[in-house]
Length: 200
Length: 200
Image (cartoon, chains in turn cyan, blue):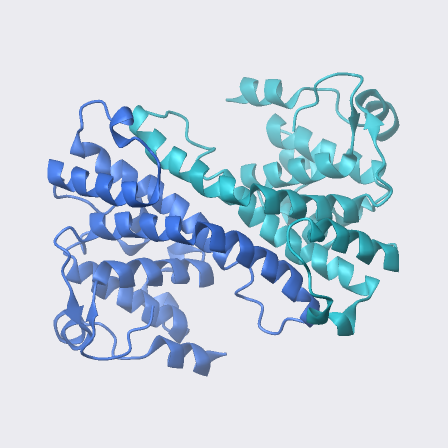
């Protein structure tokens, strides 16, 4: 995710998810992420710094970064959070309360985060199937376009899953300017695409 | 893949793809893929043996199993192979094949195998996002249903990609009965469903 201008407001949950998934694709498994192991690789290092900053901005405990996929939640969810999640999902299909009526409690939300995260990760891996191709001779366009035809079918569902994850991480819908993230939460003042370009 | 009846004719390329992907899911570390290290784990061991047998049946047993996805091709492809792949692709996708191929050169087919395999593997991972959940609480139906909705949308395209891979692996479209596979190619005479069930 690129940060374009100084005026835009950013949802740290959206930045966090996108940087987390990018770092998963680039590098070692999350239990090996620390400033020391990543410091000699700027694309990884700055993504890790951004992840830490977003954790702070969202008032999440940074010691939970390595277990992020299980849901980095310490605060309890409430009933209206369930309703909000149902509302997001209602945009893609009508959810029959009967399927889980015996457990319609805010306690299921961390578990839902974990499962939806797995799904989103696999959706992104599919979308990024060819992201690591360096050269693309013209015949490579055949599978690349096939992949596009496949994934465009899932965009609406993908967005809904994303919205559920972003909501659970940032229920208040907090947003910040880039300069605020830098000043208040140690967000690294670098452009990722420049960092990536220099590293290649 | 189910291989029920001894008389049913099997395309070894189909069995190979299916067993290869399921072994990849249950033992992602391909450096562990040899008889010795898998022997203690029957679901892995018999899949490995079936893969080896199918490679033999397809005359592709010059390649190490773990290198299969790099493209197991020595024999050159012909222009009629290229035409066949184009024909299969046209049945599932809107891609103008001719636009992307400089000289209609069948030498691109190994590349197409490698790239389409990556896509097929990521589709398979997405389809199996929740397959390792043994006991799912009822609310897990929500992400499971979401996943099914995505997967259903691309089911036909996935089948088309599978047909391309199967054709490239088995141009002659050889088929064998299970008993032939057992006699000629040392196919293990076991039922994978039974093996998996006993192991749980």
